[in-house]
Length: 179
Length: 429
Image 1: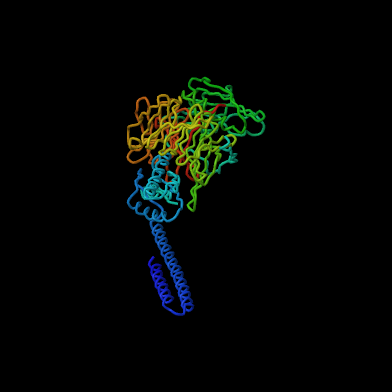
Image 2: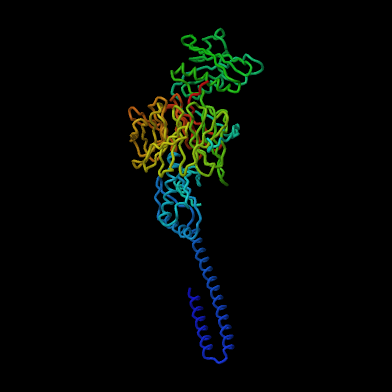
């Protein structure tokens, strides 16, 4: 905003000078010409300043957007849960905050896919996977992402990322993926 | 009907040979009854289309209660009473002898069978059955059913079928899911549906003609039904959220299912004639896995309304819900036997998930299996055996255990993972 107001002041000063010249001078024609030239120059300068300002604003917005995208990417798109739990961990909340900040700058829709480990029954796990996806959805909605932009789908235990048994594999499978 | 188009799927393909299940008995009764199944005489042109006696012999071996005598040890192959010498069978300690004759008549096979008690030296059963040549193995299983009932007092469940989900892992991308129909002994597998997206929860219609299941082929879970004989297929649901756990009512008129379209997972009933939905459970907790009682007046389901998953019973007449299981912190996915008394379920004990049987009359719970990740129990229509999914090594396989825990066998596929077995009801012939 600053460059615009500086340019505005400069233009005002130029206009004032031209007006004074026009009033005090004897050769009004010359004075008029001078005033017009000054006005044109002022206009050009103002326009240039505005363009420059716009470029800077765009660059700044793009930089901010890049920062948000970088932060979201760094946060990852997979959020992990404890066994039989759909409570968001603090680390997941922090990661989601980065995505929410980005989502508030655009109108993208997102798909949240809830998953469980292989323990327990398949249909109960379908419901548990949905509960996890909904926990992420609710956190996003509370933080300003419109619910119609979010779809949550549960895959239960049907799509593991780690096939083996044991906690080292199970902990990788208890997750919500943001897509 | 207009909004749900009937799709014809040409997916009645014979499954790949390696997807076929093989049966390995791991535990039988201590003192199995010796029984001789003599090769049946073929009274037709050329060679017999199927060795029916071999199929019967394998059925009895798989039962865990009988010890079929090796053909090489038999002193003769009688096919009529006049050719049967009891001393030959006493000599090899066979308590019973089954003989038979098979005749081809056009496109049909007729089998005549006779069962003899060696000790009493008497014929105790005889019968005639027929089928098309294509159903020769099922014809043999029907002979097994009749003989088994005569010898044990319990109807056999050999002439039944299974539906299961098999998965071929693809580490480079999406797995391959197949819904497979096979005979109860694992033979003659047929792929009903193949998809790169999950297939789940197969449920038989009570007449054995259709299956309902969940498929993610649209990118979301949806309930489908499919006619086994024709492959005719219909998408029944497409609601936001869960579309899971279809369960056909005993009269076939209603499909229970789990939907979360109104917020939390609840059980709904779909009237199959009008396709009208009725919501029957209303709770913010998870309500899922409905399983009908044989009289159709109530169903069991899993709910975590008490904090942890337990089995509850919803009575359609009174609208009342009562808790059924109290032992342990995790009891889920009940299936009720035809007697309306034995309930098989998944029970968590010491961190391991095992198959247990719960008696609805005495409220006693008995654990039947001793492996770690057992799930999806399905009970045979005669109530004798429970088929379930477990892990063997890091592969998913099917296993079976008798309701008294005395007999166990495994049914691994030669490759891939197998899961979610659904044992068919009795089919009318």
